[in-house]
Length: 114
Length: 114
Image 1: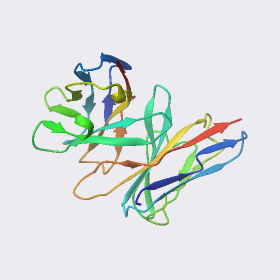
Image 2: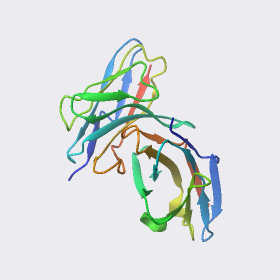
Image 3: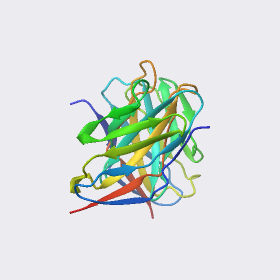
């Protein structure tokens, strides 16, 4: 069965500091991994994805994520946080067996303080 | 503009009533999804469909029904059997390609049971 864990309900960081939002996953076969961001009362917006290739994936708004197969992790990172990055972040996984079923984590709320 | 349209944005219903949430996409995507979002629980998959006239149950399908008669439409009915239907409902779609791609989301429908 597929599953995604985001161990932190909330992450607090000062503006200009690096940020990390953690994600671990479980899936049969090779994983397709995604990060999304959600602003209040809106749908989710895609940030980046990992399918294959380089373990460091770059995405929108300066975000990047590192795929670690041995630790089954896909942590979201940004070198320098902005106040406008404050939002709810979701990690998601699809497997290459079992069709297109996509499962999301519980979400991590990011607060960036000026 | 291409995208996903959900309607209505807000919906109130009395206990015991069925309601149908609309989801239409003009992205020519093959796969469509319905998720339910509750505070602290992230997005939970209700149903998904990879092709017209076919759909699969997600993790919380009980009390819900869907149809996929047209590629661009994937309506969700919340039946009176759903014990706690008050939630934010999100529809999404993606291309099939060589594997699951990123999901494109609608703006959501907030259902409140009075």
